[in-house]
Amino acid sequence: MSVSSSSSSSSSSVFVFTCLLIICLITLHITMCVAKPKNTTRSPRQLSIDYYAKACPQLEQLVGSVTSQQFKEEPVSGPATIRLFFHDCFVEGCDASILISSKPGSKMLAEKDAEDNRDLRGEGFETIRKAKALVESRCPGVVSCADILAIAARDYVHLAGGPYYQVKKGRWDGRRSMASSVASNIPRANSTVDQLLKLFSSKGLTLEDLVVLSGAHTMGFAHCDNFVSRLYDYHGTKQPDPAIDPRLLKELRMSCPHSGGNTDIVAPFDVTTPFLFDHAYYGNLVSKLGLLASDQALFLDPRTKPLVQALAKDKHNFFQAFAEAMEKMGSIGVKRGRKHGEKRKDCSMHIS
Image 1 (cartoon, rainbow, N blue to C red):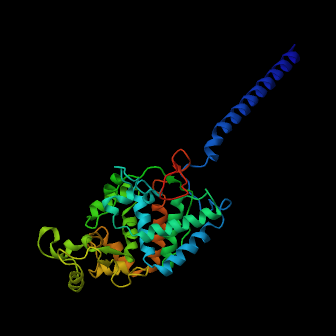
Image 2: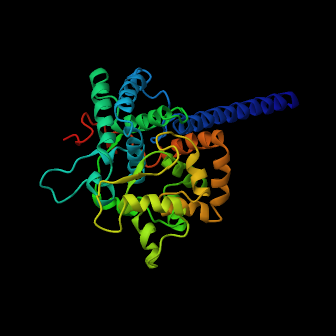
Image 3: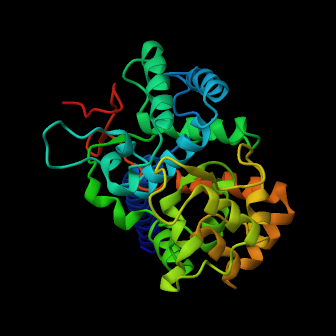
């Protein structure tokens, strides 16, 4: 009896153990099956350097052939395209919505026709048009206008003497472009540091990003109406801005009268090396040679002044920080997939 009872008890234990093992294995299998999509599904907003490695491996060379030629023929294409990229990313995200043309006869204007974008130079748009046409001839329907704009901006930074950095790709072109979205999303020539910090923060950018990305003003030009109040009637005082160097004030007044001047006149953001991408912009701010009030404010504000001073002394640090900040800015509001975007053949027109 005892032997029979022991044998029965042993068999029962083995049976229970086997059942528990099977249950554990089934549970583990189910857990792994449920968890698997979480670990392997690609983020819908993920960008990658080799996004077009198979579909259009020669993409960067194609865009580069256009940007290098444009830079030789029209050097202003550089700052024009970099500015275009900034204005695109800050409104609706980096989705090439800045390139869309308003429909003839429509009351709904596109971004490029907004008041704040009226002085975006045509050379920037022309660069993207040419690059897109070339890319379409080799890789039809594959590459977005948004990615071409990001690559071209990087190319011009490097062509002008700035850093070369890898551009992550995978953006789709946005379906929405409205002039009414621009004003509240673009920095103003007379913005305060508080206003700039609030705007940049709304895009996921930091104080350091603000100061570093402002360094793009080491190239390019601004029309007189962006800074004329600094020259004659700063903040309603009927006096010039005390934070502007007297020599620069004199030179700018010769080009930009208080009223009635030529509206096509421009002045360089960087009065020392206007066609080079370097760190002279920051040294200019230290010397009271900033063109826009919003630029000079970065040196006057105690929160941003230390970084301005540091970058003025360290070109390598600026280049490294700028490359990182451009990658960060280039990820703002990225669209992915047909549900959220499109890939236009003509960057100025939505796919109908």
